[in-house]
Image (cartoon, rainbow, N blue to C red; front, side, top):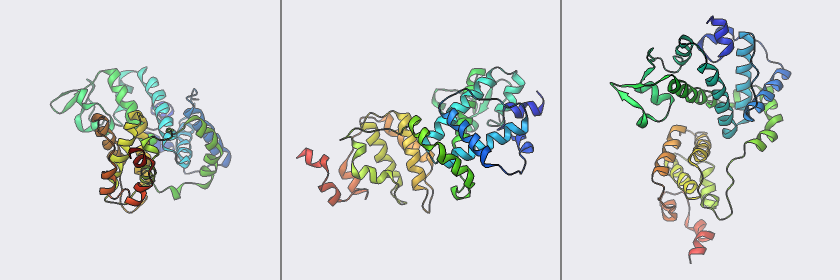
Length: 298
């Protein structure tokens, strides 16, 4: 496959940088991109561009609008749907193209569809169930496309730059679709009286200072687990918590928040301990004194 065709079909590959011109993006282009972001969040069929420069620009502008939404649930939904679409497209390609695209995420990929353990754990989950030998993970074509989908979704949804650097017209375009995105992607709703709705838990959810972030993540994960929230939704919720915590002086990563969820959901019988909340400085005796949960136990 010619490079120009590859870039047109897969505008996230490294070769796409040569087609990303330093040109201004108009308000109308940002608004069009916002419409495409909304369509992707709603899992509507994606429009395929016919020229590499157009494909690369549209991909980049969409991501700017996506990050301007500042909505982890929307970002994950967009990324998952986008990655699934590209994975379906890639599955129908010739082997040379599949290998070429997947090497963008798995540099250690060999023609027999095996990747290093390091590459695998950086981009995908499920190492415990994978076929591992000699420091490499053996995959078939379907498995390779599957881990490619995971890796691409992770890349698309991640944003590490300062949000203050986002273009104002990208932010404005994102504001225009926020109400409709909110209707499509609603964060978990928790019934009155649930553990997650407790005032101390909601306070932690807003983010805590360094030294308490791990305990805060564990408390949130336990509350979600006790309320019967799925692990996938809990991971999304804890990703938001990690982002709020990282707004301070030190970083608390999404990986750390995910680890808390994974551990708690593997030990799902663990209970929510009010005393532990107080011991870790996540709740005060005064807050607990007025808590309906404590009153209900008297």
